[in-house]
Image (cartoon, rainbow, N blue to C red):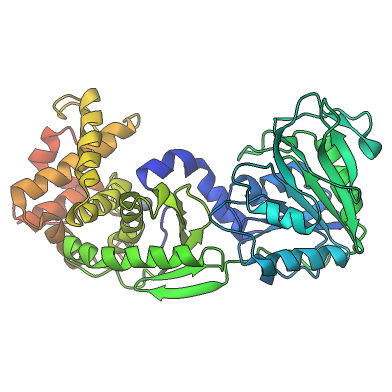
Length: 476
Ligand SMILES: [Zn+2]
């Protein structure tokens, strides 16, 4: 079952070029060429960002250490063969649990090194509780450039993106200060290990890893500390997955303690959405299309690979706003109805249309607005939708999406109610499960069989380049 990675329309713009990297990154851990002396874990369980998913490693540790990510509950992370843990100040929706804080502290006391990057805000980020437990802290006082190195960092060039000064006492060694001699980077020993606390603006941020600022001193600063704890380089590092599971219909929900409350909420949405999908499509999800739905600690949308579907836990400001989450879950689940024969051209639009139609049935005004807006966008480029071929190589996405929605809406208007259900039922009936390929010509033939009318002329009138002689499916 080859299934393209896909995204809802909105998330697509943000995640499309990155999702594959994420999916691959989860499968293949990074391994340094020479036997590494550093085994680093970057945490993405408190807050998911593409940056922490491998980009920090590429900027500061590639070639000197091996690195991987933690997707699971931080307090349960196996740190035996790890000597560097990289943490951020986190997202306010997921506090650092007392068990996770104790686990991190024990790791340091036993010889490990922790880098905690962050800045104070009002209210303080979750990382503040962890910083306090290590007798440091963030503040909301803005640091003033320039930043100067102190002690081991005396004389180094320091790039600073901006951020706030730290609150560190006598236990800490200050490593960098702002214009007014206030600390922005500091380290302390604790037991046999070390903690480094730094303003986020001292480190890279870009999801494409193109901003490795301060690498000339960040790398040795971390490596020299981490090496104090010996690791066994022959044991490959592997990502730690979100360890909690729940079966929901055709999907396995995967999450960890921090995302558990959101998993329940996503589950509730799924339960609400599923019967609508069955009614809209007139069929159950395709057999064998069991998928994993990973709850990501982020508001940044979702993605899917052949292996799993990931959903941002507070996508669209859920649960304050419900519609975006309804549309997203119905979209992602909708792919389980479409497969094993992915739709041509409109594979993503049809999934989102299923999401929108579900939202419409649940009474969200936003659903009709979403459809109308997209069709209007297409009409800006092709006023009566009869000129531009949506299958052309250079077809604009507004044309592809808007025309797809228009087609589904019109088919429903002319051949409904339940035109989409007739289409899905017919598709299941006339395609063998081992069929190779499903073209736009095949799809128009299925639509035609479904509604009992040859629709090739109608699709052609909308500038679709379709041809009944290019499909083996017979319309009678
Ligand atoms: Zn999709």
